Figure 1 (tube, one colour):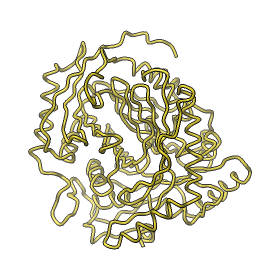
Figure 2 (cartoon, helix red, strand yellow; figure 1 turned 120 degrees about the vertical axis):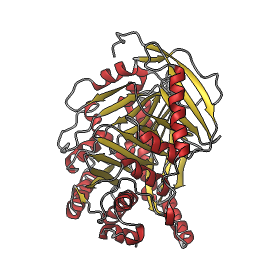
Figure 3 (tube, helix red, strand yellow; figure 1 turned 45 degrees about the vertical axis):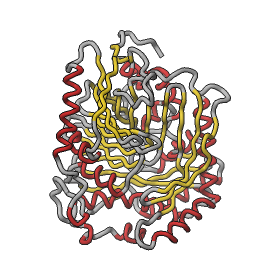
Figure 4 (tube, helix red, strand yellow; figure 1 turned 180 degrees about the vertical axis):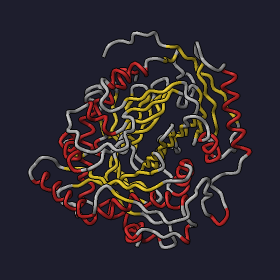
Length: 494
């Protein structure tokens, strides 16, 4: 890539600790009311921090049929630069920088793939906004930090930025927690409809089963070992998108959740899957392969034990993860120092509110601390994540393009944060709802291999959709005990 032609704007970082005691849902609600809000969730491990931002300085979009996405991206990322390292600060949190997403169809600019799926939403392939002030919550210490950047030509002074962040916190402290409401029902803010949710899908049941047959034929012919195949749901949406995010955080909490909103779209992600974590010259990916249902009712203990054991001992799910770990080791080899790639955490079963997942960690060392040029090289090497394509990756993506009738868009791309120091955390955009012009879209799927049971894959796909559709239904419809659940989801729950 060519060197930048414009001298970067040098930024200094300022921190200010503030007392805790304000709920994350309350600050989320306040941030959601600001221009171009961004909320990224966290937990006590990866990622350790939640990030709240609004009022970006500027944004960058790249759309399909434009040219040179990575060159344009690099130029945008090189506009601002950290003046000096903040690494003398113990356990320094994520710094202000860029928050946004990379859509799955960006893969067309990395590999030569057919353009067959219909792009009906026409979302950007890349969307990043640059934020010069953030509120960060540390889940380990349970403390808030206000962090601002200082640079020449800024629109607000450092003190004005701190005052703005403090005002948002003060406003959140005054308001009631929007997730706590009488009778344990979600507080529907802005919902207008009282009728049950009616959703449509981009393929019929017969189409789905026929596609599974075609995938198995490709596997028997030796084209691929595995394909991640998905189905999209859509429904009308009349509520406030942030209420959907708050419902998911309450009933389906995920360590890599995200809420972004722009002029005519919002994104609600309840993703549990880490695509990339980059800290200086260390890089990590954590693919998920293998899912089983999990209950939270009074009879959960024996059911959950059986599901956990079934996933732990499943030869099919173990083989799937082994294939994807090998694929992602090879992807990381393109950017890592030779000999540094390794499986830093073997296959592990993790519990989430509605499911068990199996995952593993693959880590490596970069040739230098991350920067704009290296980040673009990393994206071109590993995007999209192998866990949501299949193996071999390129042939798997070609088959996905042939069989899935609508373009995936943000689904199975990635969402997250790139700090001014180029430390980054990006999720795999699964369990993700796109709200676009008063309609909600979500997509779920799974890995298909030679011995996949089509009926079991169908049920797993619906299981993954259940929590998302339930959230959409609950915040738009009648109270939980009066809801009319779709026959497909009722069958899954039984």
